[in-house]
Length: 208
Figure 1: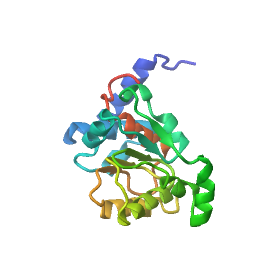
Figure 2: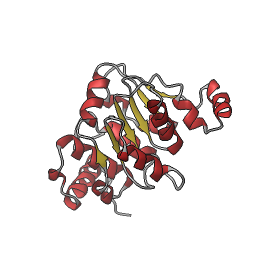
Figure 3: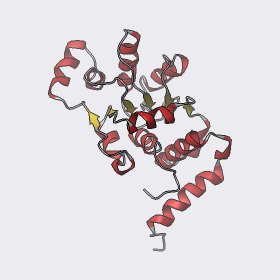
């Protein structure tokens, strides 16, 4: 079978296709880089049309990570999708979904492990990536409403048929002053959330 094998050329053509099908020049450079990477992660350029990105989301995340903040993830799939070589040295990527105390805390709260895991985050000034559970996003917003600590930036891409659309709509309607990026509707996923983190440093033309 004849097919393209050169990884650098595959990568180059992928982003060339995205740029050919959507005009990224209308977006701020940071927003364009995030949009291209999210589209690349899911193979759907139309997500670029509906992404919601606050003006300083990428800059706030970049500053936080350069200062040594951690990346907090709702799912191991998000954590494993983040390219560590793109992050400053020493940045921690953490996911508490499998922490020993998470299951008991979830049972006590009567909620999912994903939501309970949020309570274990040292969230002040961190960068949050949610790519799976709507309940994690709802819990984060509830904690902020209760006077809890706040992340430096939030990349919210929960996915699914129950709660995903609603949790992201709540964030867009009332950001609580957070710097954030999200994809309204049912679509999302760990690959998109990881791609958003990967967009913080470097440009999409650089090989991964």
